[in-house]
Image (cartoon, rainbow over all chains, first blue to last red; front, side):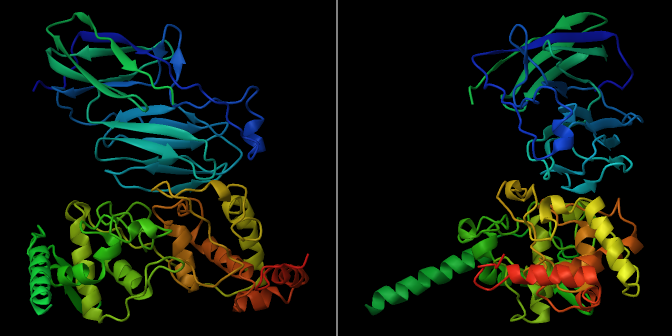
Length: 219
Length: 289
C-alpha cells in the first residue's frame, strides 16, 4: 500500500449504457404547492438519468481495491440540499467520517431519512428556516435516502473509504486525478444497473482511459 | 400407535436440543444486561428466546419468523438493531432499560404483546440475549438517554404554544390538522421495510406505540420512532418547548380524559373543537356531520 501523498496519474472515462432505459416519468408535486411552483416543467424521476450519446449520469466510480491509505477525511463537508422537494445532488459521494451537511432550502418541512443498513439508521425532521443538520457515517455503504413527507424524493449517499472517486456528469464523463503509482481496481456503481469493476495500473503521471458500459433495463 | 408417539417425541427433543446447542458467539461479559437490580444473562435468555420469541422474530433474530409474514407491522429485526421505543437519540442503540420496558409494555397497536407473564429476571435475560444478534452492541455503546426536563405547570398558554409548534413543525402533514392520521402525506407513508404504515391517530386512543404517559410522549418525538417515518425533533425543538407540544397533543385525544383536555375545554376554542371532534368518533364510525 502506498501512502496518501497525491500522485500525478489520472484516470478519465465515460459511462454509457446499451439497451433501453426506463422512461423518466414526471413527478406530481401538487400535494406540496410551494415545491410544485418551483418547477416550470415537472421534475422527472431519476432512477436512470441519461445524456447525449447514451451517457449515464450519477454513476459513482471509485477505487475499491489498492487505494492508497488515507490519513483523515477532508475537513470540508459534503452538502446535500433539499430544494424544490428535490435532492441536489441526486447522488452524493463522500468519505467515511467526513461531515455530511443537510440543508433545507424549501418552505416546507422535510425529514431526512437515510435508510442505512450497515451504518446507523437515523431520521431527523428539518423544518423550513432551521439550520443545516450535521452528521457522519463511520462505515462505507451506498445508502438510499428518502423523505417520508414527500415520497417522490429519492437520493443516495455513497460513503466511501477512499478520496479517489468521481461521479459521472450529464455527459457520462468522470475524471480521477492525483493518483499515485499503483495497481487499482475501479468499481462503477449505478443505483439501478448494478456495479462493474475494471483494473487499471498507474506507473507515473500518465492519463489512462477507463470506460464503463452498463446494460439498461426498461423498467 | 404408541411406537409412533415415542419416536415423534424423541425426534422433537433431539431437534430442540440441536437448536439449543447452537453457538451464540458471545463473550461472558458482553452477554449481560443490567436493569435496576437485575442482571440478565444471554445464555439463559437464549432458551427463553427459542421458546417464546422466535416464532415471530425468527431463528436468526432478523424478524423472519414463521408468523412474520402475516403480521401487519413486521417483527423487529434484531440484527439491524434499529429500535422504535428508546430514550436515546435517533440512530443510537437503546439502553437495556428501554428494551426491558418494551418487553413489559409490548408495542401498543402492534402484534408485540406485553410479556408481564414472564418474571422480571426472565425479561432481563431476554434483553441480554437479544443484544447478541447484532454486532453493533460489540462496537458501539448505547446512546446517552436524552435529558427530559421536569414537566412545567399546565396552562392554557402552554397548550396554545403547543398548537403553534404543531403547525410550524408541520406535524399535520402526516398526522393531519386534527391529529387523526389523515394528513396529505399519510397515505403514502412507508416504513424502512417498505411496508405501508399509518401515522398515529390522536383522536382515537390514549396509548402511544411506545407508552402512555406524558413522559413517554415527550420521548417519542424527541428521539423519533426509528425504522418508521416518524423523525426526531430533538434538533429543532427546545426541551422546554417540547412540553408545550405534549400538552397540546393531549388535547387532540378527544376520547381520552386528561387534565390537558379538561383545561382546554374551559376555553371557547377548545370546547367547540372537542364538541365537533367527538361527534365524528362515534363507535360505528357513522360520524354525524
